[in-house]
Amino acid sequence: MKNVAVLLGSLTEKSINKSLAKAIEKLAEGRLQFDYLDIGSLPHYNNDLWENPPASVTGLKHKVEAADAVLIVMPEINRSYPAVVKNALDWASRPYGKNSWTGKPLAIAGASPGAIGTAAGQNALRMTLPLYGFVVMGQPEVYFQFKPGLIDDNFQVTDDQSRGFLENFVDKYVEWIDHHGQRRELAEAAE
Ligand code: FNR
Image 1 (tube, helix red, strand yellow):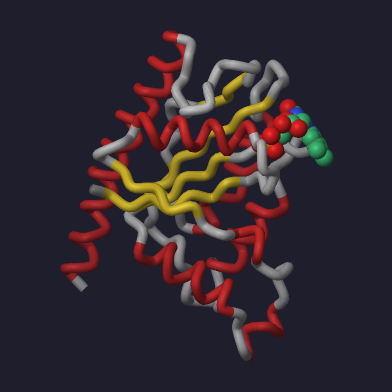
Image 2 (image 1 turned 180 degrees about the vertical axis):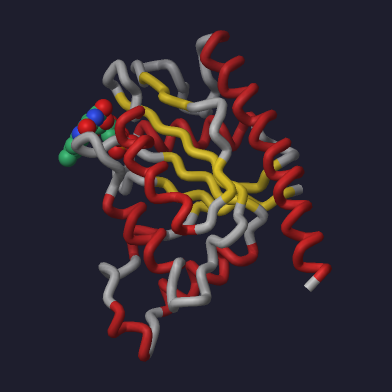
């Protein structure tokens, strides 16, 4: 079973992106184990804090380093991506030379009530990802237009077409992790 560090880009209790993440988790049951990172308790990035780093920061880095892969599930905020995601990405990318994200297979998904379903936000995020060293899965893209009832209280996707689409996303993500995660292990063994 692969361990996935999840960055949920909404701190809202009844978040539609939390529902989407839980629905994906359910579809991946038995193949992927999700660990939701506590990114809401991180301080704003401040270089001075490395002198005595907060437990929230060192804990984040340990969890990322232990993970086989990363999944970002997030809303679109004013046509960009959430500050809470950016803050977490920046913290675990430092100190310089000790970037915890390097080589991690990454997939992205997002939900919005709007028709473009976070496409603009994900585009803004994707522009930054090479710098963090992720191995980014390009397809399938998940721009999930959320409608009430589409994901029920047990995190089942109620619409066949949407469920099939997410099942395919999970299958491709598992393949992506198997392929690129293994390459990372081989690279580490060769060092
Ligand atoms: C939004 N929302 C939004 N939606 C969208 O599709 N594109 C956008 O650019 C924005 N911008 C935006 C800014 C701010 C400050 C807020 C509060 C909201 C609407 C957003 O998609 C909606 O509130 C979702 O429910 C947020 O996701 P969670 O928190 O429910 O997961």
